[in-house]
Amino acid sequence: MVRGELAMTKEKKPDRNWKEYNEHLVQRGEILLAVESLSGWQEELEEMNLGKNGRPFSYPHSLMLFLGTLRVVFSLPYRQLEGLARGLGKLISIPAPDYSTLSLRLPKLNLDPDLGYEPGEGEEVVIAVDGTGIKVTNRGEWMRKKRKGYIKIHVGVDTRTKQVVSLEVSDERTDDGEKLVPLVRKARRKARVKKVLGDGGYDTHDNFKFLAASGIEAGIKVREDSDPNCGGAREEVVRAYLKDPPGWKERVGYGQRWMAETFFSGFKRLFGEVVSAKRFERMVKEIELKVWVYNLMLGLAVAPALSAAES
Image (spheres, rainbow, N blue to C red):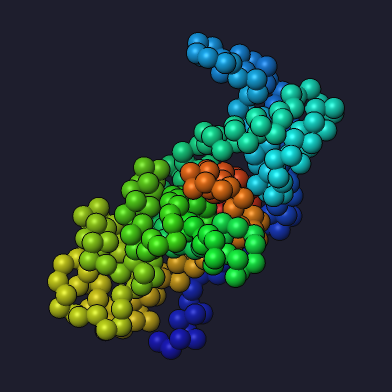
């Protein structure tokens, strides 16, 4: 069968309900100002302070999360965020934390450990793993090299929903391949992972061994000069890839690996390529909050798209 005939036999994708899809995109903006979530802040504050030792909380977690979301989406400095909270306080009955409170509470936000990701019940997922760099200063490039470098964020992305399943943050010296195992382990706490897709940066014997022991198919591209008699769990993939690279890529769905690249593109367009935090532990919290917001916003548009595909 020739390539053209093969393409014709592929199932046609269902038409997307663009009206519903566009409405969900609009709702992404609505969630940023979902002030109704703050209506019960007095009761929440009482519950937070129940049995608490030391100084009681003056501002509820929901308010901090609300303001933190606005901060990362609009890249607001803490003092501007204080002014925004003060302005909102004039419109709705919410307390307005000051600069010191914001700078202390926001980096310590306890977020959903699942990053807002919810797989389908009993669903097996395919994740694409990859990493990218994020600058730690917005100064010029030559200044950046003289002072600080960058951090790396490593993600496992559900190729079906395009949401982040697992996240790791490291310094710039960490190789991507070192983060496959922790990414997959985190993903397995949330979903049944059946396949992992990754580029040549993840081509190590240890990674293949881990995936094989976990019963997960390895869709990892191996090096062109790999030894076909390398042994271990990696050998089968090496032989299959060297025999027919295009055929192997098609069989494992290697093209879906670009879902991770798609995430990085959307993430940097939304939040920029710079973190504002100065200390590493705060940089991690900032990235976690941004990924949580990204998953939340993406989920609003993913739902109708998936329902259309399944109908």
